Image (cartoon, rainbow, N blue to C red):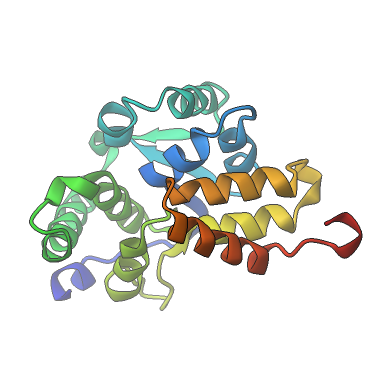
Length: 214
């Protein structure tokens, strides 16, 4: 932890965020509506995606990759290139990703590449001073809380699927129906009956049905 804390971002950029692979796939694979573009594009952030994710982690997700490419073309999403870092940022980036990789290896049964896109993205977000990381990985919140803290005392805010459901429910102008988000959220259960049951309960707590519209 001490190595990273000595290399701190000089500027805390409140309106910039990186997006992680799991969020892109979970939302982007939904068929029938381009939810990925609609939801992420509505956030008041300058959005970034790491070049590694595009090259290595979206190969089998055609619908998600299509929407990502369209967002890049429409300039609502920017591709982060490691080559864009200056010398000081490269040092901080290397230290941060090494620390997160070592900590992650302990929790991933020695499979460090399982979440490499997440580690690279969070490291880049930290050295650039970006305020948010959009990810549904539980480990991401641990990384942010334990390691990715700025001199101001702020840490990188992690926005997960629960936060996204709440955000959509609070923004009816987006035109996304409750039943659409419920279907998306429950699909994260991947056919596991117990998991689906838990997700249904969670969704009802996040976005309760209106009595007259239930």
